[in-house]
Amino acid sequence: MTDAPTARLLAALSATGIGARFVGGCVRNALLGIAPGDIDIAVDKPPTDVTRALEAAGIKVAPTGIAHGTVTAVVDHHPYEITTLRRDVETDGRHAVVAFTDDWREDAARRDFTINAMSCDAAGALWDYFGGRADLDARRVRFVGDPDTRIVEDVLRVMRFFRFHAWYGKPPLDPEGLAACRRHMGKLRALSAERVRTELLKLLAADDPADVVEAMAVSGAFDHWLPQYQGATRLRALIANERLVGESDGLRRLAALLDPVTDAVAFGKRLKLSTQQGVRLQVMLAGTPEIDATDPAIVRKQIYRLGAALYIDRLLLDRGAASDDQLRAAHHLARSWPVPELPIGGADVIRAGIKAGPDVGLLIDAVETWWIARDFAPDREACLAELARLIKAR
View 1 (spheres, rainbow, N blue to C red):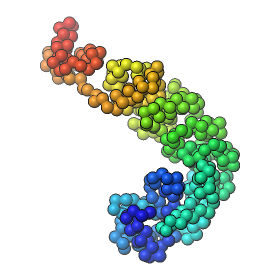
View 2: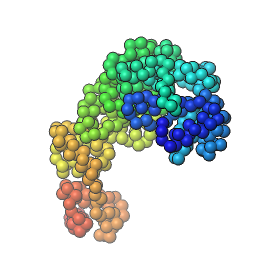
View 3: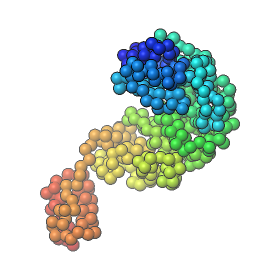
View 4: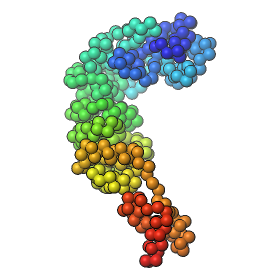
């Protein structure tokens, strides 16, 4: 609120009579003592007025969501989303047609949860029309108004209900909200894979989402999008391992929920994962090689074969017989060990008299196997000597 770029932005709006308040997540997180991420601001004038006021003050403005009243202002390299107060004119469960308004309560009434419906003005006054502060203090995620109405407006709110509870709630889930979500579970199949994937990965990134995941499964949230769900037992073990090393990852946690025989490629396409995410998922679900974190030499071999990032995924998903200390040591090795490169290449094989072709690759593979078995210690001279020995033995 008091940072110079923010003060400059608010001053530019105020100078032309535009009322502005901080809204949404930045207000919620500030009340929780969590550093806000994106700074969202609501205003009581249309985007044309906002753009004119900011440009007059020398502030760059981009019409990033003009159909819904949103522009993005950049002040000293800090982006701010500024959205005109709105009311829903028409909704179909996925998209909304909106009209602008200057009624702050009307705008708050169309938001999903009470903890997201609060606003704060430049003087620091909190505007809380629906009991969001009390719900936040109680760690309760509750829909604004009638839960069924909120869900019918946007079915994704079923997923968001569970996601926000995973991040900000404590047991039990709000019974009215949960009952409404159950009534509308079948509509999740109408959502796009991108929206479902985004919400699911955000949910799984919470500190400990296992209980919420189980509640979702019982409620039928996974019936369409995640039929490969096999329970949260493996997820709980993964979370415990992640806490030992101080890191977590939503995609890795998703892998922990899936049946190991899941076709990772088909699943990735269905959920519209990126190519990189799909490859990670495929490696995480693979049963081989079996991870062994009890021997540093074996750890190095597996890091070399899998790559550090994929090794960590497999390590945390299935630590095998490793103790807590061995798990930490293997994780540290994967994060810190400079993975070496084989000191020789195909050109060396050809210079040794082997014609280009399959034999070159076979010899390189043989030298590499020999080099790895000696814990990557042999230098280039030793590798060339081993190559010469192999050629002579042909």
